[in-house]
Image (cartoon, rainbow, N blue to C red):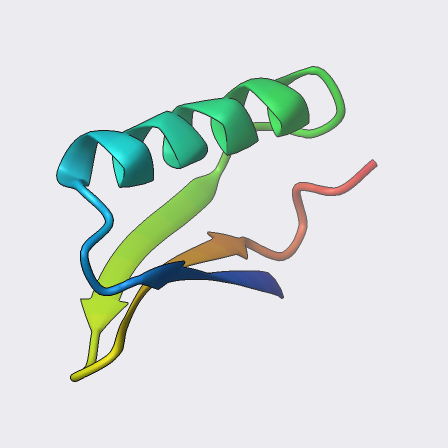
Length: 59
């Protein structure tokens, strides 16, 4: 599994996070079988988008 983690300011809107997720999905769609898992987490100061590309889908 390949994992990417993008850090956003805590006050980033859900739309900003959604735009980033859409951009990532569009970027990898042409290169790999799109078996991707997105997760959003947060702490006191930041919000994180975690992108996991599952094994056995890379060419």
